[in-house]
Image 1 (tube, helix red, strand yellow):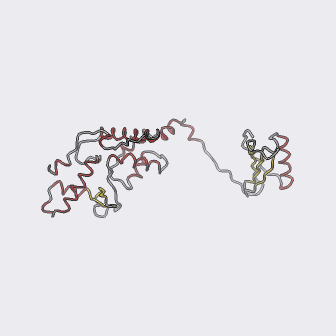
Image 2 (tube, rainbow, N blue to C red):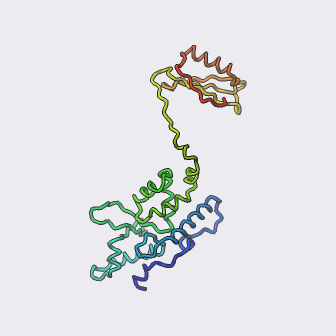
Image 3 (tube, rainbow, N blue to C red):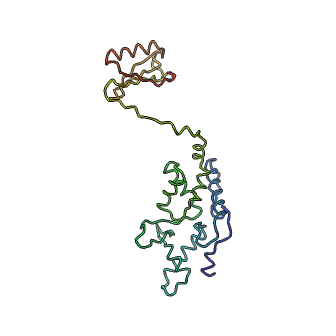
Length: 261
């Protein structure tokens, strides 16, 4: 087999040709992730182009490219054919922990960071990890994160992954005006400028006859006062608040969350 025929793109394969399946019974979530990954690989293989410089590397093409480059490096410049010269201008091979990795050739004074070529069976996981690490922020930011270390993952692949991302689909399903809510921080400048009160329900683990805790906090100093309550009636809450106010002083603003307690 000649070097030219080795790198010729193979016929479109299925995900099963680039992914090894475990025979062991897996949990439902693992099976679901494997199905998503295999569907993703199948779609990439269907939409890839057939040129020699396409960014999709099947595992076979990935290993063959590494072998060709390693062999070309052993030859003198005069003995290298046109294909080997072209490959050496584009790619390089880096050995990490006794494993060869295909990397982008660093050209002159351009970015000197190492960028890896990712075989198709690893593309899904690379995109998934990057997308998760940036908090599901979308195509632009996911691709930017990936391109810090990877050379051949495309915007089309990222877009395909995000279109199937469950968390992103949930966000897209939310009403558009839900993101327009503006949350302004509460600012206090002095002691007693604002007091915050809430009730803690302890009915599941009462202390004798006491089933609730009144929590009063000065917003500026975070000074906190607790009072045990037998019930959450307005009369009992008001009595304890009055006791706090007569001891420490009343706030200019008394804030509660209008909750059930």
